[in-house]
Length: 149
Ligand code: CA2
Image (tube, rainbow, N blue to C red):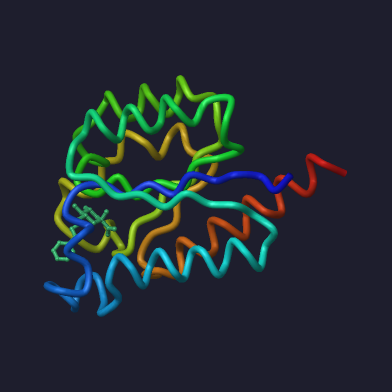
């Protein structure tokens, strides 16, 4: 059976491709989901790709991943900088987590330089647009192959 990776997206990312292209590019959330699905297929992974504007829903999805998924790729959006609850849920999942941001948060406002997730993540990718998601999936594929060997 292929390892299942949960790809989670936080608030306002449903607006991708409709506004702020200089910051977030021209791809829509549907384009991003398709790119992840193609990358996952090429890497021998299954994915579930989701986005929500409701913090509790995201937390419920993270809880549901425990004992079901092999890893989590997450762009927590603005909750990156505010949510201890999402960090705690990720820790409780006991799954490897890769944090992804489309923009380079370190080139932006100081409040975006703090992440509650980074210190519990396997790795953090930012500033590479949608490529960051595909890199995260490629890394998980390598990691799971190593563990299976
Ligand atoms: O760069 C990223 O991926 C962010 O996680 C995006 C968040 C931001 O709060 C983080 O600091 C960095 C914002 C997502 C909002 O997405 C939009 C997309 C199009 C138009 C408006 C907002």
